[in-house]
Length: 131
Image 1 (cartoon, one colour):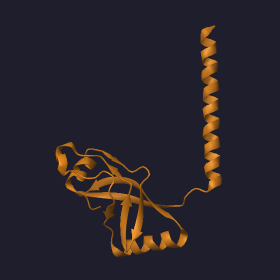
Image 2 (cartoon, one colour; image 1 turned 45 degrees about the vertical axis):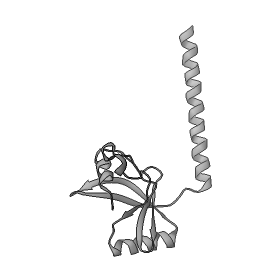
Image 3 (tube, one colour; image 1 turned 30 degrees about the vertical axis):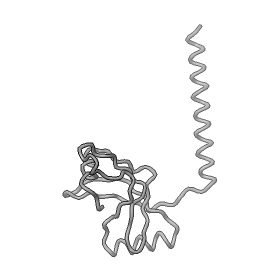
Image 4 (cartoon, one colour; image 1 turned 90 degrees about the vertical axis):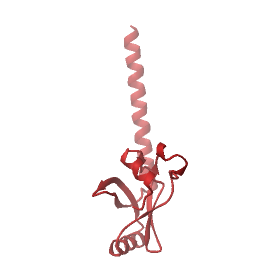
């Protein structure tokens, strides 16, 4: 990953968030979008933009393989983790398929049902304490 100095310092301090981030292949290059790397206080005004698009450094063979899978099967590249190895920041990527609409509805219904059960248990516990 091509990073600025303040980004590396923030990453080492654990100020990164890969939630909602994804990677795209554009003109035989891979870019990471929506990865938030918090500001490094000691950098002052020479710091970095927290949500900037970052270029991932992959070799040509890896890029070609990812391009084929993303275009052909409609998969998305998602970062799983960011770590350091040998002084270099690495990003572990996964090829994933998005959820279908009915899967989303099932998950929402399951969460709502769980919330209702927890509310009922909470109310029941409150009632038994007052007696």
